[in-house]
Length: 169
View 1 (cartoon, rainbow, N blue to C red):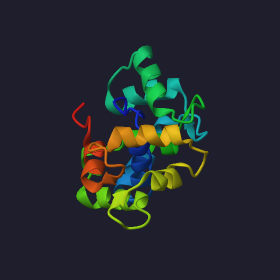
View 2: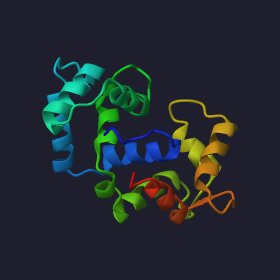
View 3: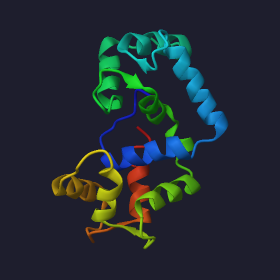
View 4: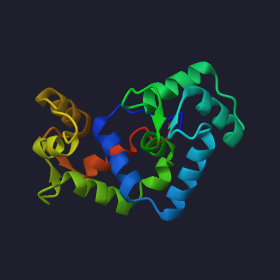
């Protein structure tokens, strides 16, 4: 979980979709168990102290204050000062297990609203703009991050490359 970085909007949205819609019951049960173990006060959100103590109890590893702060900076995507269950799930899933061909195809289809086999800027705006109004500059930034051949659309191969980028880190 401490290696997760919410640095790419489209990648983060894809992970959230996969975590919410595509995990098996055993995977979600295990993540819920770990979250409940970390959530000492049972309020449904984790503060820095709960993360630090939970990490030691569950993983046997002491995290420094800097590591915990860096984790919060990456995982607390709504900047609430807490890690809620959905943020925890997205950050805690094992990327290598999550990124199966079937799950990648399903996530790609979530963006490819018209079924053309390509993701356009307007489709990105439709999917990512559901909670907030995204301006064209934000959409352009997403396209620059993912559209490797600069043709104005994102192919399935470009999408997979984006999802697997930095996987080894």
